[in-house]
Image (cartoon, rainbow, N blue to C red; front, side, top):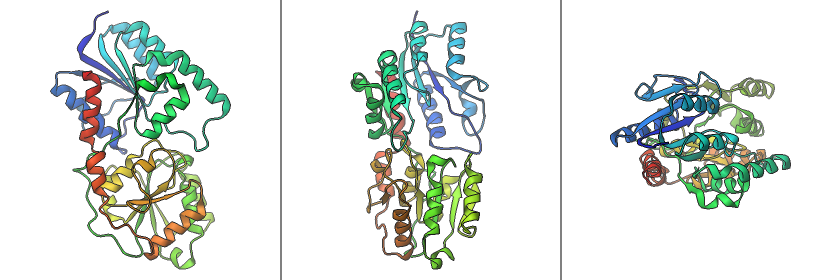
Length: 361
């Protein structure tokens, strides 16, 4: 079977939603442009089709919400497209799918791991299952990409030391030009926001309980704007009502212009229980808005405690309460411009170049 050095496939189990435009959307658009500039055609496989943003420029093959893996195998069997590289995003790694790929294509396979891990790790049964899958199927993946050092370490824990030499680190990056910068932070009584998909693992319930423990004086004044939607939203709203905190939380829903919103605040609160490498943390820091977050995933690769934000232990509600109170009264404050680190290490341009190098090898 021949290989076309001018054609690659990118498989993304990532729903395209006009109301939720995030860092990965910008990466997909920018990477497609980079490939076209170099005469590389990309077939993009997504669960659905959309034309928002620059998606109209992409050559999208929609699965119509079928299994992306099954759809791609069927598509390839029908069309016999000779890809040089097949890249996967947001797919489960080391599954029989990768073995099936090796039987129908000689393309190099690159698997990008965006998956966060549970706070206390996987149950023993799942650990054993993952290790077995690693032994059986990791041989069919040429390169694993970790989006943080944390992810690299977890990949080895999951699938075994035999993949260590095949792992590369490529940090996620963000578009800096579109992010408005906060010029001057409030010395006291700062404005807070949180921005995330509203599911239990994001720990917003911990934030609500932490606010409940604040002094009555602060609770009479503080307002935390919550951006995002998700399956846990109703539970969070009910918790706010049951604790009589309705004046403290403002559920704003999803917004497509979040990058222009950060600059209206003084701190981003992200009490997550599991994280791979958060783009909202990067965007907030790029807006010169420090981050209060937890010691999970790759958070500490972007946030240094006391320098550009504050790190608390995941699920430690009292610790979170103390940090909110200290920043509210101005007893703790961040002095530096938090944008500098992002400019130097986590730009979208750098992310695109690093991914481009993968298909030039």
